[in-house]
Amino acid sequence: MSRVLGRVQRALEGLYRVESPCAVADHLVSAEERAALGVAAEPDEQLLLRDDADGLSVGLFVSAAALARLEGELDEERLGDFLLAVEGVSHFVYATVRAQADRPFSQLELELQAEVDKYLMLLLGTWRAGQAPPAGLRRRLFGDVRYLDHLSPDERERYQTANAAADDYAASLEHRFLRHRAVDEMLDELRRFWRLDCAGKLDHIVARAA
Image 1 (tube, rainbow, N blue to C red):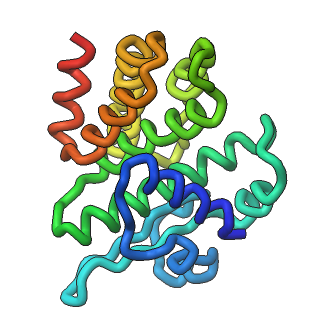
Image 2: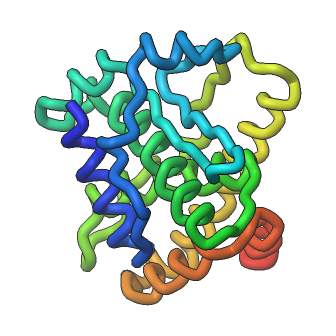
Image 3: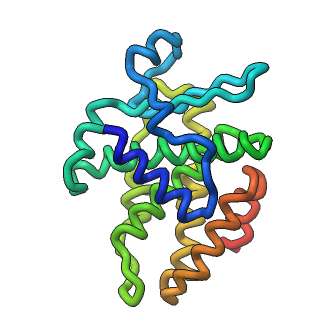
């Protein structure tokens, strides 16, 4: 069931030209293992981090049901499961690469990059150079959003901020690159964006939206 996560990891690392020091398949956490950690919330996807004297320990939980459904061909019914997997792997790659470089990162930074990654994985999987960009992708990902009831006010605000910023960034990508079919230029832009810290990402989005 971890094959899909491995493919997503390779796709993201190839996209951004980075390499995580570890494979996500080796750091999957089962429902039983997560329960033993005593985490407060148990969503269908969760990055588990522990920073101690030995360094940063990373685990990723993705529900077994979602992974099982992704063993089939990706279709409309499995889209939510696929986005769940992309979000988890995005968190995993970003955290491990940043930790290897001894660069701090914030929860907002993780969520913002994951929102951008979900957009890109769907975009690059459905769009072909020479064709018009897929219509309605931004609205579907960033407009039709529902937040879980158990989120705290701070968590809800963080997710809303990441969602709105990713929507603005995707809009700027479509305006600057997609409508001109400038794929290589867009990839260069995305690689620079990935390497910015949280403040840099947010400032970059505001500057490009102006």
